[in-house]
Every structure is written in structure tokens, then in C-alpha cells.
Figure 1 (cartoon, rainbow, N blue to C red):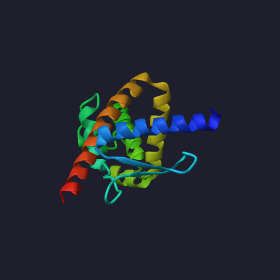
Figure 2 (figure 1 turned 90 degrees about the vertical axis):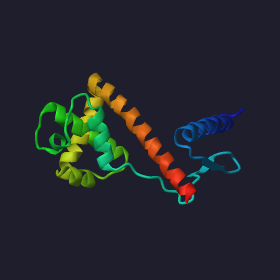
Figure 3 (figure 1 turned 90 degrees about the horizontal axis):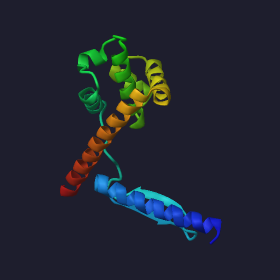
Length: 164
């Protein structure tokens, strides 16, 4: 077996595993189209409108505040207070919001801050993820919770579309 053939077999196996796991988590099927050489050409989610719901910033804020290590109110979160715990909470929020493809400007507008402040928070989160084990630990916990909630959102949205 040549290196190219082995790569194609391995890629196909990994893609099938991913599709199976994705279906288990979200209830959505993934259609994979390959060309003659077996290389992946196209990946599409099997939906009528091909759009997935987006988690709102408000929902993201609520999930982070609910599961953050310190009890923080929404008012404190939005305040200009620069206590380390509040700043860390905003770092988590900004980092996850960017993962959901929100722009710096839209996150800044939501938080009542300039987009460059949001960029700084995101960069700070990246630095903490590289250097602070306690930050990484809570980040991983929040990531599991947020991914689980997002999967539930997708499943609910998918079922509503099928029923209509």
C-alpha cells in the first residue's frame, strides 16, 4: 500500500468515526462526498436549511456564571470592576464567544466595552491557557458544559424543524 493510499484509508476511517460521534452528540447526520481518489471533496450537514443554531451571548454568559468557581452576578460581570476573578470570568466568556465566531466588536458591544478590550481579554485567556493549570482546569470543565448545552440546542432545533 502506498503512502497516499494509506493516508486515504486512514482519513476515511477518521472521518467515519467523527461522523458517528457527531451523530451521537447532536442527532445530525453528516454526508461525506469523495472523488475518485477517495479524497474528501465536500462535507455537509444533512439538514433541510443547512444552518445550525448559534448559542447566544446571553446563554453563554449564564452558563459561565452558573458554573464559574466563584458566585458572580450578571451585574458584577458587566461592571467595570477589575478584580482578578471577574477578569478571569470575562476571559472565559470572551474565549468561548470567539469559538462561536462572534466578532470582537459584537462581544464588546454586549459587554459594553471597546473591541480592543475584548481582544486583550481573549489574548489574556490564551496566555492563561498556556501557563496556568487552574485556569486550564476550569476552562476544560466549562468547555464540556458548554459543548453539552450546545449539542442539546442543536438537537432541539433539529427536532423542531423536523416536526414542522
